[in-house]
Length: 379
Ligand SMILES: Cc1cc2nc3c(=O)[nH]c(=O)nc-3n(C[C@H](O)[C@H](O)[C@H](O)COP(=O)(O)O)c2cc1C
Image 1: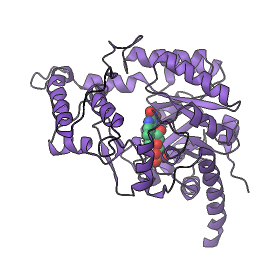
Image 2: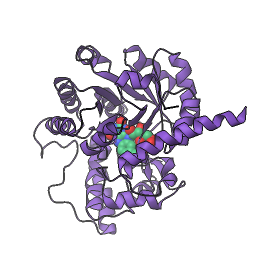
Image 3: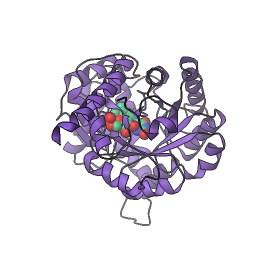
Image 4: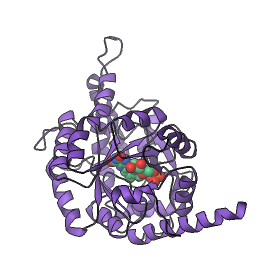
């Protein structure tokens, strides 16, 4: 039996496997490869300036005639963190802007100890001076991205953080299918009320920003809350076909897969980062706020550890990326896997080689089909 669910109908694809939007990794050639192989490729466009996003969309269209998606973050989730950062009327608590000088000194000290030189003309996120258009990760930046998503009439839009409610009418008028990544039942109910088409239940096991709730516990609770109204994709630690089958046994109708597609020839990350994925195992990821300010699962590294050792609380989004950006840019240029190995999920130990994305997709599908057929053994 071929792997099939309502997800295939909603998106017009062959297999219910979706490439997770991963900033820096889910680039046009990877998204196109996944779509061409029968899944749904989704661009990880969170950090794309609006015109760069338009170029990405056009590039993916030149590489595939199949449906594809665009994943960005939405402003409310970032604004909420920035507002929490004060000044909140609590005069004893310094605001994020007041702390930035001290935190920059912490980062400069880290770079000096590690022998990292500033990258010339490094993009300083949220500074905005060095680039045209709205400041990086500002409300205007996210809104300008959404204008491009709407103007380009993309087949699928995915909100990686936040609620796409305010854009739903215009997205629907274009025929765009909409999904939202959530990490709790409460948030699932909120995005469902906005009239989206698919909810992605991403648990604690996953790479990048993640939920405090484990994937295995989260999926069935979200499935129950949706009560058949819309299909649910499972996400977080789903790294081979057995994981896809397990998510489907929990009531999901497919999977949103990140880490498994990171170790592919087409992924936009550095070669040394792909090699780390092959080399490292199950215990080698940690959840840290040191990169973006929100809890994100990352491969263990000295930058994340430095915050723990100093007992220092990273700043909320979007301020922390102003601190981490130059450090990680320098470490990436120097191929420092001990500092900038990248985000990854807990399934990292299942990755044994760097392969074409088509092979990864085909294995996810055939592995799921085999695992589902083996389920009969237990009756
Ligand atoms: C390298 C990397 C970058 C990510 N960047 C984003 C992003 O920009 N936007 C987003 O919505 N999620 C992002 N995520 C989370 C993924 O969309 C997805 O939920 C996660 O990878 C699923 O877990 P898995 O990696 O265990 O498959 C990222 C994950 C990784 C591993």
